[in-house]
Image 1 (cartoon, rainbow, N blue to C red):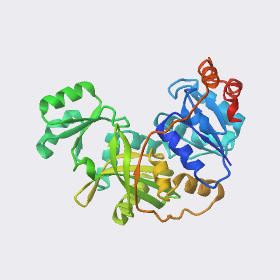
Image 2: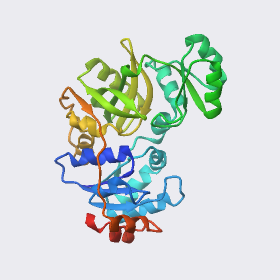
Image 3: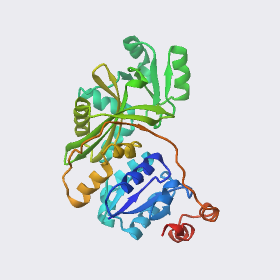
Length: 341
């Protein structure tokens, strides 16, 4: 199979590549990213530069790559590309005879906007922190008091997240994040979990839950266990969302009650950690999507996973050649990254 993975410079995209490389699948990996020094480009069999997702040239140049490489499937490794590719999914699949493992556009829209995520959970009676928009801050304060969490409605990796302890801190946080959502502060950082689920044909047949500790917005310690009750709640949420493929659910445990504060309609940055525990969701999804194999819950091994930095060495001549590229053309990439072929 040929698998094209975007976001080779992002933790998410790199995690997908690492999970795929850990499988027994005979896969040719094609990686793309806007930066010539994205480490994931150097882990792939072939690599291409693309403009930033916000650039009007992104989609035309991405389609050139699809036409040239003819991948069997596209896996999205950055948040910023999800909405755009979801909107064009049907056309891209038909035109280039590929599959895009992306949820419907309305699902991506719910997941990327934390207020819409809250409304989705609240309206279905699913556990979530009590939340409000800035105009209703007083009602939230009266209901739950301080501290409160202030965060951008659209954001990731804890960027722009503030814990506020009084109204003065709240006012300052809202000056920094005017398009924010306010939420009750649930439990403690030691009660936080991240979960992965796979949904196909409206059913979630496989999931994993890990307790985690964060550093700079990313999981750096994960504690894996079966968690049957928590998995059941995660599967209910994933199915209610109407996702296609991977879903990431992040929550804190308030006593015995799950309170979800974020949903991502994609793989997670912890995807390679889950693979270490026996839950390689990339392999499960590809086998189902391309070979029609049933989605079966694998046994999950209890363990503690400690994350750490690693290095990719690029020789000076290759680094200089890739960095000097003026336009992200395929021929230039092959000349610059010739060591990959």
